[in-house]
Image 1 (cartoon, rainbow, N blue to C red):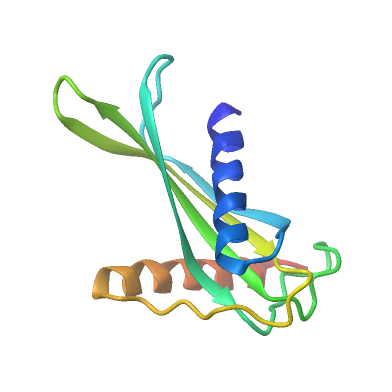
Image 2 (cartoon, rainbow, N blue to C red):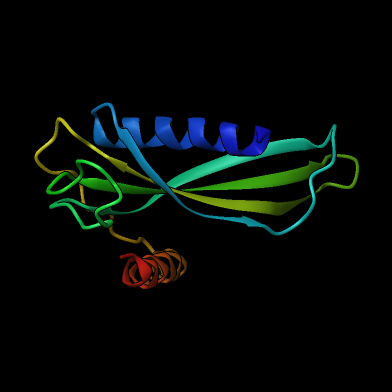
Amino acid sequence: GFLMRRAFELAFATAYLFGGDKPRFLEVDDISFDKPVDVGDLLVFKSRVLYTMPDGGNLGHYVDKHDGLPLVNVEVEVWVTCPEQKKAEVSNHLYFTFALPESKTCKLVLPANIDQARRQAIRMHADEIQADLRP
């Protein structure tokens, strides 16, 4: 729970700063636990806005009051660092979707390089598949 709470708080702050409007949490898209995290590990959290839907999107009828609102998808990576060995490894990826209820639109995210484009495309594809599974 600790990792998810910290990741959520960072994702919320990221969406808030990016959108310039207090975001409304809509859903946790995905959480991956790639490596174990032990008590006492030194953690570094990194966040980024992966993509946006400036004109809104359809997350399904189970998500209340989001039709037509700009959506922001935020990725949070959790790194376990070991200063003695001068190494760090990604332990978790968490994805959150927020709406900007007071905004008519939001900035469009454009990748700056091929790695960012790949990361964005993979997440957008995963979200499309997930949307197809929703009732």
